[in-house]
Amino acid sequence: MYAQMVKSEATQEDPAKLAAFQSRIDADEKIEPKDWMPEGYRKTLIRQIGQHAHSEIVGQLPEANWITRAPTLERKAILLAKVQDEAGHGLYLYCAAETLGVSRDEITEMLLDGRMKYSSIFNYPTLNWADVGAVGWLVDGAAIMNQVPLQRTSYGPYSRAMIRICKEESFHQRQGYDAIRKMAGGTPDQKRMAQDALNRFWYPSLMMFGPSDKDSVHSTQSMKWKIKMNTNDELRQKFVDQTVPQAEYLGLTIPDPKLNWNDDRGHYDFSEPDWSEFFDVISGNGPCNTDRLAARNQAWDDGKWVRAGLMAHAEKKRSGTVAAE
Ligand code: FAQ
Image 1 (cartoon, helix red, strand yellow):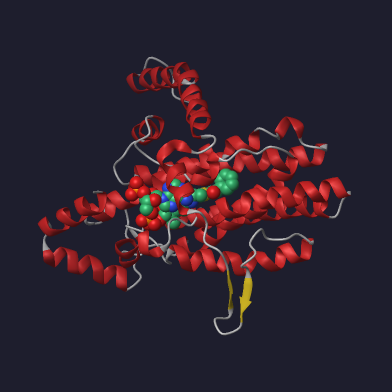
Image 2 (cartoon, rainbow, N blue to C red):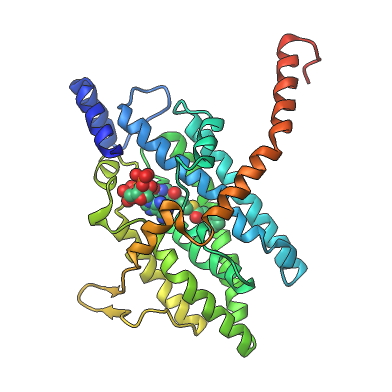
């Protein structure tokens, strides 16, 4: 329906303007907030940047759950810094979305009432410390694979936000790999926990790249506009190719009996995730969807008095009843 809406809006727009816009995209020019843009381009960006921002914010929950139980002071400090970075990523992305004419409050409300999505991966639980390592290694690893090309995306504010985010994500992936390496090289029980975390997070991580290309409704148009730089399957393949040797180095086994290096293709062959599970999770029926949205709703309600106080203060400053700082 969304794709149809974008198409019908495009037919009402001035063909000359649309052609000039596409030429700018083809010439790798950045589109800036005050430039003319097709309505479908604007809406697609709000959807993707908004979903991305919400993922960063909701994505804090599975790891924050382990800050108080991190095994050492050093691991606690690292995890705390990582989770704070995710909040920062959410904020840069909400700011980028605001340049497209939607307020942060509006898109937050769309998350809270279920009109906007966030990444499927954050609807899976982190059951133990090995899961925190697996999230950093696999989830941040998949996130970077998707985000590095987005540094070249056509919309200026999004592309600039991605440059900073990618620097931080790379530290996140390394901290996760380091945590899981410690577990994999530890006692037999620790190694078993690392393997179990890999078993549970492997397929959900592959799902992060979105449905297979044949089922991806937005890819063709988004790639034409350079909102997306690669297809979902291209990035999923790159992630598998990069991650298999890392698992081998750790002495862990990817839970896929069909995983096999294919000399002709120069890539690993691998099993597709269970796509019915993916569609179930993104329709709100994953293991943690209800908890995640309840936590975000609670945070929004609890913060109401702070937002009201800040607005009242800003209003007083504007009207001159308090001194400006
Ligand atoms: N989860 O036509 P496509 C992170 C939806 S950041 C939920 O292929 P598209 C950092 C899609 O919205 C992770 N929904 O869609 C971190 C569409 O539904 P709609 C987030 C998904 O947009 C780490 C429908 O399926 N990263 O993790 C998912 O062209 C650790 C059809 O799909 C980004 O958002 C999914 N996985 O491609 C934080 C990156 N996949 O909207 C904390 C930017 C698809 O029509 C801790 N986004 N859907 O109702 C993108 O690159 C794209 O939006 C894709 C999806 C590739 C995610």
